[in-house]
Amino acid sequence: MRVCLMIEGQEGVSWEQWVALARAAEDANLDGLFRSDHYRSIQRGEPAGALDAWATLAGLAAVTDRIRLGTMVTPVTFRRAQVLAKMVVTVDHISGGRVELGLGAGWYEAEHEAYGFAFPPLRERMDELDRQLAEIVRHWDDAPEVQPKPVQRPHPPIIIGGTAKPRTVRAAVAHADEYNTVWPTVEEARERKRALDDAARGAGREPLRFSMMTGCVVGNDAAELEERLAAYQALTGKETPAISGTVDQVVGQLREYEAAGVERVMLQHMAHEDVAMVTVLGEVAAQLG
Image (cartoon, rainbow, N blue to C red; front, side, top):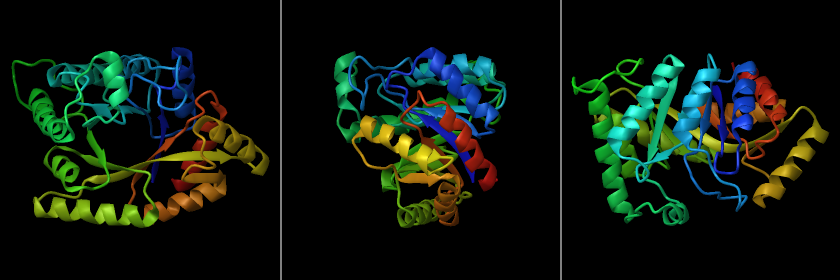
């Protein structure tokens, strides 16, 4: 199982903190750094907010060498498909072929209202997801008048997220390389993986890579863990995230998901000021190998 760092960029992450987190992720030999694509805070409230996701990733691409970089996920309501396709290609070139595009229908109505984005009904947003996926792939793979093409061939990996409901599974099987499911139990992960594999088989294609995003707090020992859990509760109002414990405990929990078919995990780190936890995640990743 590959381990990635997931940061909620809308919670007031500064540029200096982004650089520190990205460099820590590289030093810890994590597989990648993913960030949300929101503009308005969800947990911390005002005045926390977000630097733009794709502008941030372009900057991080220039100051890192190895880690994968991507969104989890970009809403189709923020940008025209043609502009987003060009943004991703730009980061792909800056990074030397390390970018991934997570794309979704969008859900956070409050930020759409605050920034003046249209927020149509879910069915229309899902239709737009299908349309943008097709248009982005056309720009990358075909359309000879659209240049330059991505560094990664045939194109940067596309990730669709969800809970394995038919509409997102259908979109993923049609266009994506990976399906990312959110906050599942082990049994839910197993069931969602089965539904995704069945759909891929029915469409005559190989199974997609299956990943998950979930919250995580980890410490080197019980005292460090307790301190981090207290910070997590203060930020979120929740006692514990789905994955928590010392390094060995977290490895054991993730092994259960690996047995259920999860190939990659994006571990959500809510207390982004705590760069030291990224190093501990590196110890988890080293054991998972």
